[in-house]
Length: 304
Length: 306
Image 1 (cartoon, rainbow over the protein chains, first blue to last red):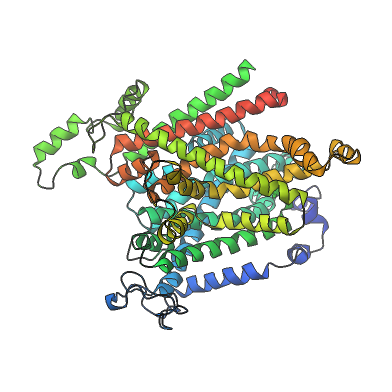
Image 2: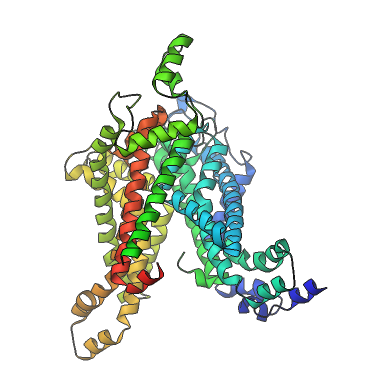
């Protein structure tokens, strides 16, 4: 009973979320106009990623040495069969770019969910309880941040067997601190609000305070952070795979494609250009969507 | 002030010790270096002797204490692969990495300052749009891919610059651009917003009213103040370049710390990995510490809170 009463009595919450009508949250999304271009572009990447090799015209791993180094279709010597040309082993680059989207998105999804969950939980606990727990967590964050992320990733990647799960673990370990620090800051100010203080006084249990009074108020921030992380994760995965410490052949990753193409940079400029364009366009659209989300639902975070 | 400095230095030291434990433990989690060092057909007693010889048969915490004790005296052990002291190897490669990081920082600042200032002065014009577009692109293109594109254009097509190696300025240009590429966006934004603030201040309006030429107003009076936030962040950017150098050095075969560590990772050359990553961390922490302290010097309020 008391719990329900307090759950309703939260006019002291973030004013934007509370004072607006029910549809305010949805309508606000459209206030700044939708980023149509980035949404379309990212939508295409998602469709390519979900389709697996369903959309790929060729088997992405099929070797055809007779058809090696075919230029893209729009150049002399290119053919419509290989839209983006072929690589040193005659593999179809267009098909590999499509399949590469899958790995990029799968890694991004796992890494973001894991690092976001761990970081948000740790940040909430540290911010809410303060004291020794907070000090310990913040020291851990400091320690972790004193090792450049790629250096830490190298050490980890060397120890674990390279592959998709290793990449996810490495990125999670690298990025949870980012969420933890920001969420901790949010919680520090949230827990001073009257409705949280009242709930505590009324004897509401800590898990309920977390779930009902704190979590809903950090969801916006979490969503923005997660969207802004997509591009970073994709670049991180590409870098690790490029170094040979991430995704391993025969799996297809954009970073791995660049590593292969690097050895034949003199023979096939397209092999080193096109996977990079795929990375850049994906990250660009994800970043633009993230910026728009941040400006729309969480304007106070403009510094991110 | 002494308390503030002491506290920050202490935090830095804790971070470095923590980092060393983290690096040590992770690098021993799996992967037996002996397997890589000896031929497959080596008899068991040889393997056992080698393991004892290198201290790999002790419990992990004792291995760490031995490692830490030696590290304090500058002894990180011998490189398994090169049979030279790991520290010598690291110190030997460090200057090249610092050279690259400084060059990358110079490149990014030289690009970010004009872009940021012009975007602020011509706010909303095409220059502002170009600046924003550049910043968006910069954050979407991985530095290593920028490096590959540079090699493609300037080494292979135009044959203007050497594709790899270490030497004069011509070797430095492309790696510096590839490394400095990413932070340009953030630096431009810092300069732009600082300039926007300063340009609206009373003393600039006063200067304009008194008829001071616009160029003098912008570069002499406004920029000097607007540069402060960027200058205080330079240490942080320098530190982040040390991390970014790991991939860039591999692409350009730059004989720096990053490439050495990447190679050591592949051959499970623990002493070199530990010494290399720990040294990068020490540099990283030192840079950030200096940044913190410089804030304290500039703004006394932070000293009290610290």
